[in-house]
Image (cartoon, rainbow, N blue to C red; front, top):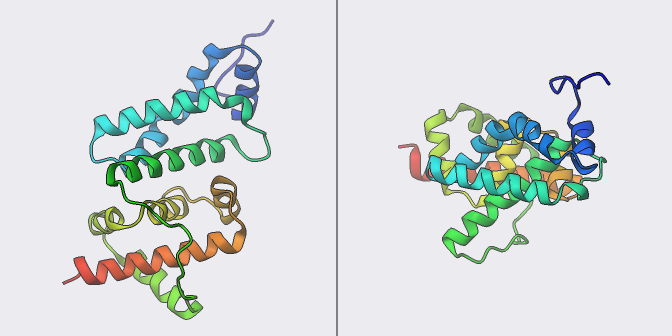
Length: 188
């Protein structure tokens, strides 16, 4: 039997192998994604040790639930969904604030959204991080998915289990809040 080259095996095939009983091969999944998951956790946590703990917990959760991965989407999308949801829950526990995801917000006109997107892209990285830390965890997560992870609308839909129009509206609202917070608290 020819040895497996783990650098060339797809994520999905590797997951199948782990589910089929080769659980020790999950370490290759960890090696592929731990840095990316850690960096996402670091954007929600206030320190590297907390981000490391979150990363560890996320991989345990992923391993336990690996048999639930349905192969309809990419493995990375599934893992990032777990990551963002876990980080959002972590932030909510920290703040102990009841968060309503279905708040009534007026429709944002396309011209305003285009302006917000242009302004958002002009904000310096260190200032943007300050503003992102002020945002609701769900707003922060969707912006990170869109701009940091370059996820498509479809991938964000799958990760958050939302329809296309809901994803687009949440991105618009998050951009608007980011620009508003920047103008109100950072830009002087």
